[in-house]
Amino acid sequence: MTDERTFDVIIIGAGPAGLQAALHAVRKKARVVVVGRPGRSSIATAHVENYLCVEGVVAGEELLRIGVAQVKKFGAELLEEDVLHVSQAEDGMVQVRTECCTLSAWALVIATGTSRKKLRVKGEKELAGRGVSYCVDCDANFFRNAKVSVVGDGSAAVDGALTLTGYASEVTLVTHGLDVAKDLADKLKASSVRVMVGTWVREISGEQAVTGVVLENDQVLEVEGVFVELGSKGAMELAVGLGVLLDTETFTHIVTNKKQETNVPGIFSAGDITGHPYQMAKAVGEGCVAGLAAANYARNQQKTVNEVD
Ligand SMILES: Cc1cc2nc3c(=O)[nH]c(=O)nc-3n(C[C@H](O)[C@H](O)[C@H](O)COP(=O)(O)OP(=O)(O)OC[C@H]3O[C@@H](n4cnc5c(N)ncnc54)[C@H](O)[C@@H]3O)c2cc1C
Image 1: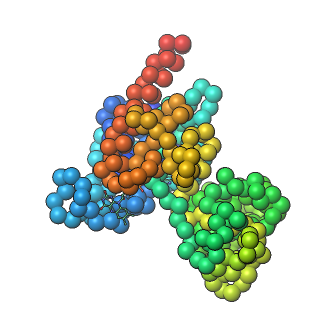
Image 2 (image 1 turned 135 degrees about the vertical axis):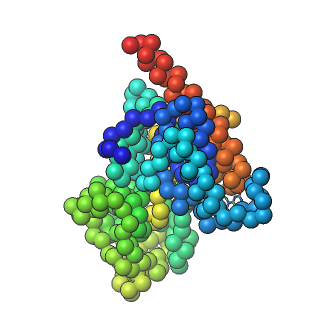
Image 3 (image 1 turned 90 degrees about the horizontal axis):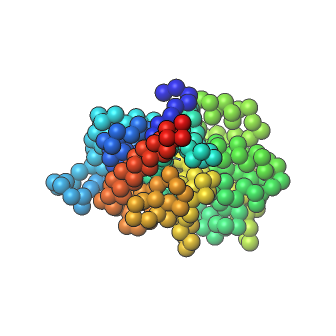
């Protein structure tokens, strides 16, 4: 894939919701790209026996393999990367930045599942919201001129650490070992982020607020903030940049109507990220509706542009 590409519909997420959205959008003749890693779908490690038309128990991995082949057969592209940033231009076109590319489209489907992964270490739960954060884009501003650490091995951790250099006085990235594209690794190298490879956080310390982290190698980092960024950038961060409404109780789900439309024209959402029940049947149902709606939206936008031309 070249660095800059234009599609009708971009789908973020290669789980059941995203793949089903792709299948329905591409069969509506939309040019579709799915950005995401099937291997990171929640269903990838599951054994499923409550999905209609499945006999006995079937591995989620196998369902995903078939789903990916199906969407590719009908002409959708799959870019197995993480999305780092999403924005919408004044003309309504959505721009999606991944580790390698910049993609544009008239419509976007957010189908990122739910992945607020926890470290599960002492102090994390007690200090959540008091120095422990799971969203750099939401909380970076609270840590102006403070020392912070970021924990993680993927693109979200690296991108988060780079963002924090614009706010914090010192940023330390704690990682087992990084698994990111070369471009991002190069940006990290050129930045002021201090990287500690081959260790992990054992404990987060502090009484009322975070005062430090204890690493597995017994080293102590004195920090006021700990950003837990395990895996990919969550929908919360992506949604924040677009002005997409989240549910007001937990701020973890995207609010949609029955057409899977969010409050922002051209932005649709489907699957676990829109709320319970976290089930494949619900994810594919919503994916179908979102894919069709996104393809229609993109077609109407193009028509409008052509009429003006
Ligand atoms: C252990 C386990 C067992 C389960 N068993 C069952 C079962 O038996 N039956 C059932 O119906 N359901 C089951 N579920 C639930 C089911 O897995 C989910 O409901 C379903 O996978 C939701 O689909 P989704 O497409 O919304 O999200 P997911 O399948 O989680 O897919 C999310 C996708 O988004 C991508 N993504 C996330 N962030 C980004 C980003 N920044 N950039 C690019 N891509 C991104 C991920 O890589 C992934 O491809 C199980 C879940 C688990 C964890």
